Image (cartoon, rainbow, N blue to C red; front, side, top):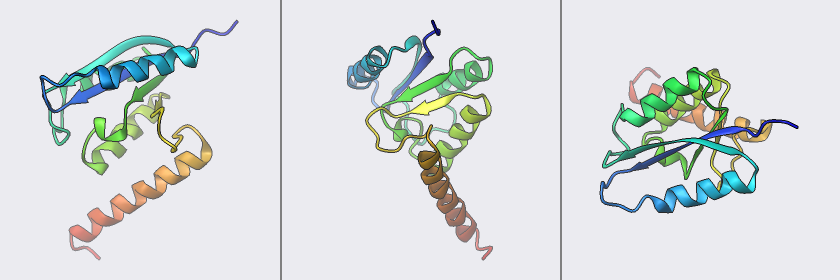
Length: 137
């Protein structure tokens, strides 16, 4: 029998007093429903999505590199960051560590060929926008 996939959850809320159960419970249930093993929950409370270095996010990326899990689940991509370029950077780091990124309620499956293609198109659009903002056209 195969070992269940080890999963980490990443939770971020910009309000420290906000109930994070709205993010944790559906993700934990998705792990159960899919027969996966929840090994860690990384949580940044009271931290803006514009923050470049949330401590739990940085710890999660380090643990990904160290092979503590094979998948990260988030409620939606904006929980990683409110800046597209940061989401893309985080996604690249996870891919480099052979860690899947899953957004259970999203139609975008980042682990399928078509989902990665759509995500890469979004990535190319962000890069073009940055290039144009720099005035290097």
